Image 1 (cartoon, rainbow, N blue to C red):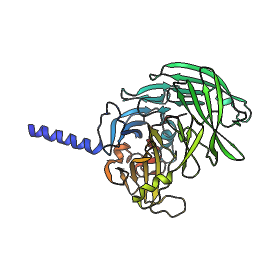
Image 2 (spheres, rainbow, N blue to C red):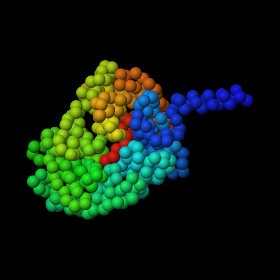
Image 3 (cartoon, rainbow, N blue to C red):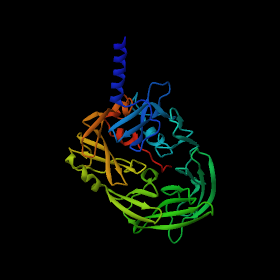
Image 4 (cartoon, rainbow, N blue to C red):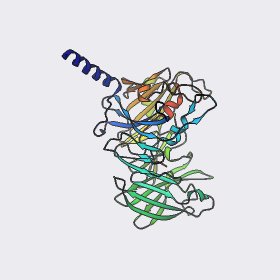
Amino acid sequence: MRKIIFLIVSVCILSISLIGCSKPPKTPSENSIPFLTFSVNQNQKENCVEAYLNYWDLANGKIIHIDNAFYRVNKGPARTDKPGYFDWESVISYYALPLSWDGGSYIYLESNLHTPENIPDYFKVKMFNGSEGSYYSKNLQVELRDFKNVNYLKMPYGDFTFRIFDDYGKIVMEKNIKISLYNDVFHGGNSGGEAYFYEKDSKEVKGLYLYYDTKGGHLLICEINLEKGTYEWHDVKDAEGCIPNMNQLDVSIIGNNFIVPMCGCSLGTVDADNYTCKFLDQQDIFKSLSFYNSKIYCGGYPQIPGEYKDFLILNGTIDYGNTGDGTLSENYRHLWIAYNTRSNDIAGILEWNHLEPQFFVVKDKNGKELSRIKSNVLIKDSDKTYDIDGEPYINGYFLFVNCIKFPHKNGG
């Protein structure tokens, strides 16, 4: 009998070591980066997309996958021209993401789309009735009133409502403020802004805005004092010219900095306190990954997949069979790179190889393989879910573009 018990315990331990622990840690450690994976559940009467919680354990070089749905996405797929195939891609791309999530203490979900399932106690859940014209960040909702009737070319101001929440989601301040969109500094760009965060000590909201003129793009900071009901525009120094159009998914927030994509493979770090911008070429970061023996391209959308504490997640794609026609060959790899913005160092790499799609591989910054996890475990049933072309997700580009999402505070 003891031998049988010992055998059962040994098998359980072995299974856990291969696929990761099935129970969430009591609290996420500083050396673990949380992320979500999205899977199609086709076993229920009504098919749905489910979000699963995972941890990239940098210290131990492994992925911990929690095998219980984190929340459910209440949106059915669209039909396709092919009988038996459904368009789940648009559901995952447009409806699955949280409204805002810092990865460690809170998650904001949309009540019309998301149903919480197994969310650990250390996450505070706030449900919103999502609407167009609303933007979210930690402890903050920014609503552009009468959003549908705004004409950016004619409206002299934006009519905003700022709502501040405590860590439990209770409203502690609400303020309506009209902000000019045409003045000596801001010349009428998108009134909704690209990103926001709230400074608790000063009771201020910092907003990042973008507009274009004959010189190209311009970044600005709008500093809003909620107690006084006043605001002030600031031009971001050294940031003009080749700035791509962007939305909330493109801009990350670390501390009091906005991290924005610039033209090419460059990133801009906008300091919201002194209104300056410093540039970082991702290729300079990729140079330390010379063990791949091939150029790493800035790949994926958004260019910055997310952020957690001081970590910025970057995307990179290596195409060993590059033909120069702009399309991927069969021999490519996709990388998620955990970059520590404080130490300016790569903390770890998560790799997916199109020639070996059945695994995700965890590597250190020197290219040493530390562990691997099955793709159909991390992205549950990805070998049984098919895209609109009839290809299983486990083989496709869609797998890494949409099915893996890191924390992202800036949401709309």
